[in-house]
Length: 174
Image (cartoon, rainbow, N blue to C red):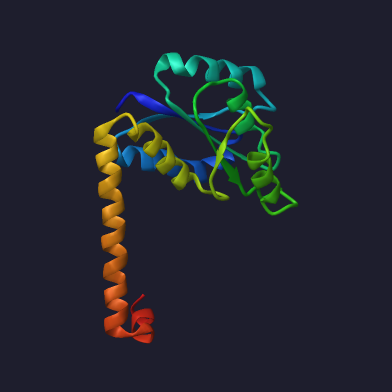
């Protein structure tokens, strides 16, 4: 396994079903990660300890996922100089349908920046972390370019098939 460059934190193990997507994307690019369940409400000292020590271990980017109040990404950002990507998570117990976590990740005060991806957008968080790391790593940047070229090739093949078959026949085969 490659040396971890990304710290992936979530407030509950129930978030792992979504947050694993970030780790899996990073693995595609050969980027190691540390995946942790550390709640900023239930274990605040451990979160701060982990974040403060991460840079010395080689961590370059954090991804923090949390539902409801979604405090974790902001707490991470308050204790590091490294980039933080927040993943607002849809929580089954949320009365606000995820809007609470979206706003909590997006509405941090000046001086505490957190990049926000879509609700349950851990895959995009992983991609964004890879792109950040790729700014200083030509091999990672080349893998990202190849990834995007493959996406383009795949969508153009689907379009060609749709144009050839028409939408009704295309849908029958899906």
